[in-house]
Length: 239
Image 1 (cartoon, one colour):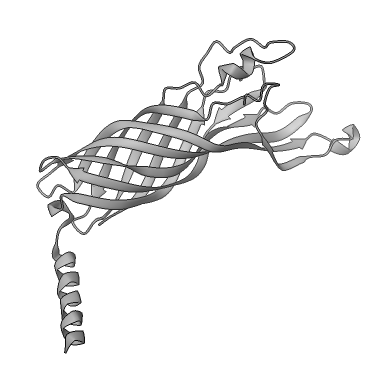
Image 2 (cartoon, one colour; image 1 turned 60 degrees about the vertical axis):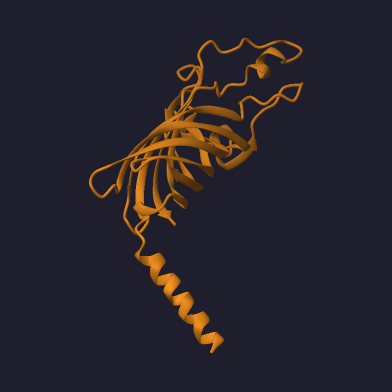
């Protein structure tokens, strides 16, 4: 008898949960998963005979959202984003083709304000800021040489290496970033949907300490800032 009552109670709870619209919830947890496109200005691009291009990576996050009013809510959480940039080498007498991808495996913590629009409140526009830390950074290089046998050269295939460091242990790139984001989302009353977001970092990707502490001959600090820019397209699940 007790088992029957327990099973009936579980069924009632599940049925009640299924009928409750996501728009009626005051607090929600959620998951976002999708893809990201990232780029950054490459210093001395023309001098290095390279061309800046977009790097595609993965994106996944855990979110917590609390409603402030009927249409206004605040969201935070933690997520993983494969940020970075990529360069394509220009064709020359030596190089047939080639590219380098810069991987910033990053943890992102956002703080976002959402405003729900429409009668059913299933669409929202959102804006806020984020803090990001790249816990692992590396680059992958591919180069196809013109007439490698004649020049006694070997093509470079998926060569993975860490970013260079100076004598003081400072990395070429700064792992910390912070900036703003803007986005739009659709979330059905059952809690499933999709979103699109733009991100703009404000902290220089180039680590000035790498240049100022380089020994024995200090290198000049780049005059222009290098900033991360990204876009994310993702699937949403809210509970």
